[in-house]
Length: 122
Ligand SMILES: [Zn+2]
Image: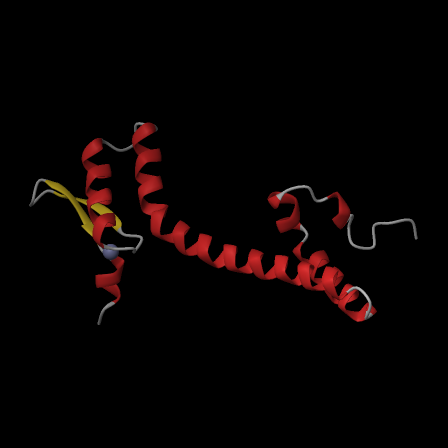
């Protein structure tokens, strides 16, 4: 076979590339560790996998926290929402990490944020 056993892992140049080849990276790590004479390369490959896992977990937590704010600004800039809605979402964001819902209250004559953290509490 002329290369490609690890889906050309050697052609991964950046984070996007390596994230798409994590399975191959895991197989490469195990392969290097199994050789018995490439411990340093095996260890660094494994460390890279650990870093990717940590980065994934941390970024997913951050994405979940920011999602509602990003949506509000995107909807605002697409002329679907107004500043009042974005302000309501950002105000909620200051004190709560949940992904809230937003609805118009005719009774209060303003946008009302429903906190999912509160909604989940029995
Ligand atoms: Zn909340």
